[in-house]
Length: 292
Image 1 (cartoon, rainbow, N blue to C red):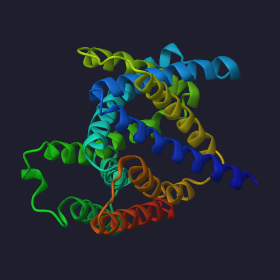
Image 2 (cartoon, rainbow, N blue to C red):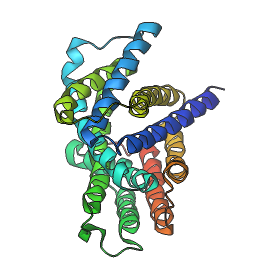
Image 3 (spheres, rainbow, N blue to C red):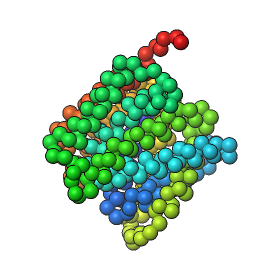
């Protein structure tokens, strides 16, 4: 029963986070990328203030401010890259490229934490790179040579998983010291403060549509993250990793129904290579390590 509830929590969280990406894409038609980022984190912080007040969860602590500021700065960079990408590229394409983040974590672990990379890890890195190249180049001429701004979108879609992987590496070392709700609320509030100067400028007229989507993006981000955290407490990470692959399906469906996006076969071929890389990487992570 505990594992079933964990799967339901995680599956629901993944769906909500995919919906948040779709809302960001819709807002991107009227707002700048930085304005969308600001609304995303301000909204999440406000919703989490309400959550903590109603549930009696822990508030952020002063001694955690430095760690939260580190993560917040990286989250602003990651969200800016990702939201720019989803505004200019199909949702499913960005979701597929985003799945390379766990593979990046392996590489970062070797660079910064001197973790050993064996043959399996190198194979995973190679599959991830091949999948990304297939999605970007298959069926097209050179997308980086286009003059319509797509080159920047492809670059941001590739960089976003890398910066997100750095955030994951930090969370891995910080999560044992902070309560999940306090951690998320604190870093979201700091991220909103950091993104506010970038969001200054000409804002469009705040129509009911923009106001509704602006409120929704923060709610989806806050609730989605809390569902994922509660699910992860009940499930092994390896099981969550398999559930996380469904994000590609949800992104494809949302893109099709709301933005008339029809991904080509290169997405599913490249996405399959990336998923294979993640499966190989997660299996390697749970294998017993030799004693040093």
